[in-house]
Amino acid sequence: MAALAIAGGKPAIADDCNVEYGAEVAKRCVACHAIDIDAISKVGPPLAGVVGRQAASYPDFKYSRALRAITTTWTAEELDKFLAAPQKYARGTSMAFAGLRKEEERADLICFLQTLSAATTDK
Image 1 (cartoon, rainbow, N blue to C red):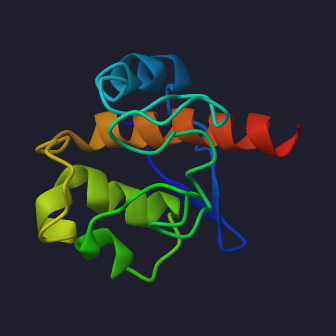
Image 2: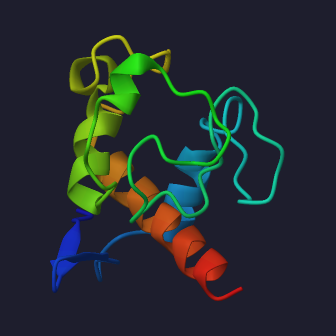
């Protein structure tokens, strides 16, 4: 089973996560989110760079009041909680997605998102 790893307070890619499967899971996200950080925003902000980003901080994106009220950084742990049940995590969020029930799907998706963060940081 995939697991989230935290190294030195920063999210790390777990040895047993499946980045390729995470990319498959991410295909559910692209109806509302662009993958590339430089892409024009769709319904939601781009996913690249989300891991390690302050919640509701992508420039020029109009976040819901519920997400603006969150003062966390999107760590692997926080993303796992949010992706499990977005409406429960941030009541009133405009994100209509019901969530990912399977822990393994969430972990693999987060592993994939972490690779996007690393790629955009290196630019």
